[in-house]
Image 1 (tube, helix red, strand yellow):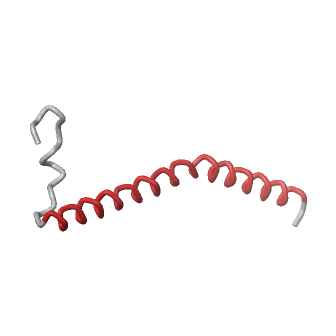
Image 2 (image 1 turned 60 degrees about the horizontal axis):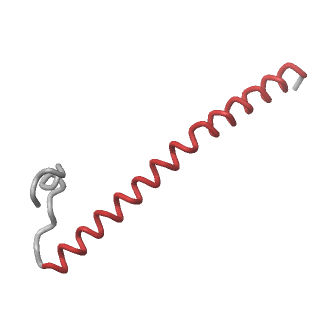
Amino acid sequence: MNGNQIEGLIGMLTTLGILVLLALPSVLGVVRDRRIDRQLRQARRTRAAGAGAEPESPRRRHGAARPA
């Protein structure tokens, strides 16, 4: 490898590193949101199974102004 190729490799790796640093918070947020959604679904199923009722549809309780 000559000097130009090494400089190109360093530039490419630097660009890739910056891209990873910029994308990492978004990826971590998506993973966190999916984990929370999974926990909420599990809690809803557990609560419905304990009450002996069918799980509630998420569309039923959409607005805060509607009575439960």
